[in-house]
Amino acid sequence: MSNIKVTELLMDEKEWEKLAAQQGLFTSIGLAEGEILNFMEGKQEVALTDIVRHLDGIPWSTTIMGIGALIREGLIAYKGQNQYVLLNDKR
Image 1 (spheres, rainbow, N blue to C red):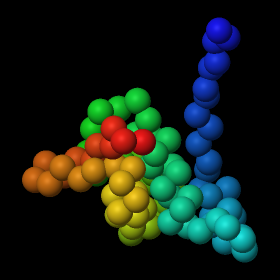
Image 2 (cartoon, rainbow, N blue to C red):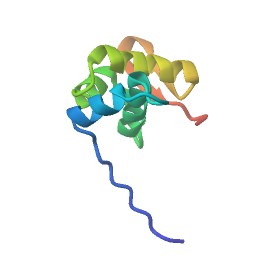
Image 3 (cartoon, rainbow, N blue to C red):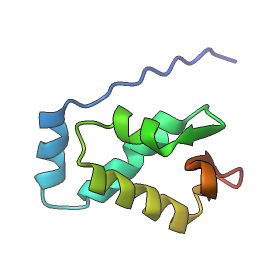
């Protein structure tokens, strides 16, 4: 079995805005969803404030809508009072 290394390459703000503005299948919320899942990968639970802070190049409202979309899709779950989101084990 080969060893595969995955390196996270974050987009800078200009790259993100350019992709979000393009026509086609890309939407700003969809791009935010991908960035959120990349950030959460390998973590059990993440505070909402940590996600928003990590994705500082993305408007916070878009980040929150991305989190909501991921919850509706069943990819993450919301842990109420502590303001945490969890990766869903069903992925």
